[in-house]
Amino acid sequence: MIGWDPASRSVLMHDPNGEANLVGGGYVSTTIGSGKSQRYSERNWGRRWMVEGVGSGWWLELAV
Picture 1 (spheres, rainbow, N blue to C red):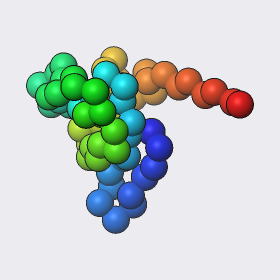
Picture 2: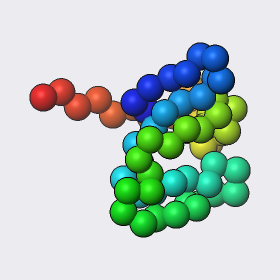
Picture 3: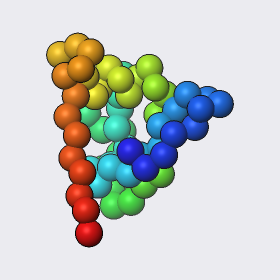
Picture 4: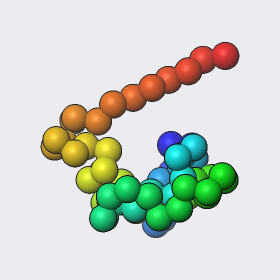
């Protein structure tokens, strides 16, 4: 996640794998750059992020 829009309750993501299909699973597009600056609703992103239920998501933090 690279950002959050509280007005629309959506997350802004960069996904190197492409544009995710959060409802159906998989990806809408996997062409290079297709996952850049994607907006996903909080509702749909939460379902993908926490597949096993609330609190089951993971986090990766990289520091330079």
